[in-house]
Amino acid sequence: MRLALLLFLIVPLLAASPSFARPASFEPTPACPRHVEERVLEAASAARGPRPEESAWQVRASACGAWPGDSSLTVAVVAAARAESDTDAELTKVDLVVALVERDTPRVRAHHVRVLDEDAGFRIDESSLALDRAVYRLKPGVAAFGVDVLSGYIPNCADQGVGPLRTLYVREGSRLVPVLEDVPLRGWVDIVPPPSRCNWGADEARARTARYRTTIAVVPRRGADWAQLVVSVRRTEEARKPAPPRTRRLVLEHDGERYGLPGGRDWQPWTPFED
Image (tube, rainbow, N blue to C red; front, side, top):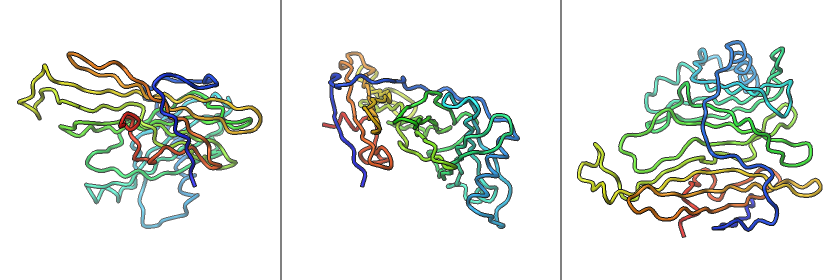
């Protein structure tokens, strides 16, 4: 059972100050060399077993960068689909493979595979992946790194949206394990939509948009306990007379397996303000 200690605060009231806080941002990471992409996809195929009916991979995006936690390793992320997935234009399954690769060989030392479903509102393109180069020290001997995924498509006439989404991974032997999944780093909601081609009759003077930016901080604990993760969301408004900025904080405890957001993947950055 996932346990999450929720503390929504308007002003900071934490007893311990965070050891690390990173502003939410998205900077696409340079793509991996082709031979690294091939090694990572080979590891993913070997782990799940052969599927003779499948054809060659189609790499949609990749990102590679040195991991500060170990200079001998590279973090490699590859998003790839099988050719036969394209038979369904409305839904394509894309494998997102996150791996730690030896810098010199490159041998895959640990990896994790997750299936992403592309649909009318979500697409992976060459600029969809980024690495968070920070080291999240969650307990003695355990450090996490972040992977950001951003949809390459924004639906027309949307009145709200989020992205990119950050997932933190830790290494357990030959596996990479997600310990915090799909935290939206940014979000926006049109409270009163502005004039646009989808909203010709809107009054620009009344337009009001709420914007949300997220940070993730680590609050260490003494001894061998897992650190707390603090997810902070800052809300601002774009309007003629905007409301004052507000910040809410969500304190997450490790439940023995991971850190859980309330509502899981349905959690949105505006959720803490719905009171």
